[in-house]
Length: 181
Image (cartoon, rainbow, N blue to C red; front, side):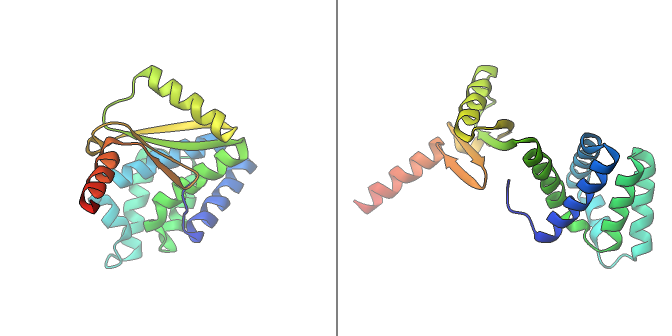
């Protein structure tokens, strides 16, 4: 799990406690992630919900309208209202990641992010997943991302460590070696 602010971690832990009490861990996780992706994908919405120049009541009105349209679970919607009222909405992405990390840890899973220049084939995906399952000794949740700048190879992030076997990194090392003579 990536390092997240202590504040985001505490909010995520509080939400997880509520989710466990209501037996809605998966539902909260899915809805929270979808909501976080929506906010991250819309710069105007993000600014509207986080901009200090807007009155809190205005920001809360925007959030309430959005929550009504999305139909989020009541406890999760109330959690998001508290986050906004306490001026912590800018930490939403970290809260989402922290919540997922806490859920994964409780379930004995580890999240592995694989960046590649081209889409992974199903065989490559399965091979990498099996490799990392053996390496970490736990179930792996693999997230993939396309990063054309890598040129080839992959960059794997797991547990705060980065393993870079990309062609771009190899070329950079070769360039450094040539420049050193």
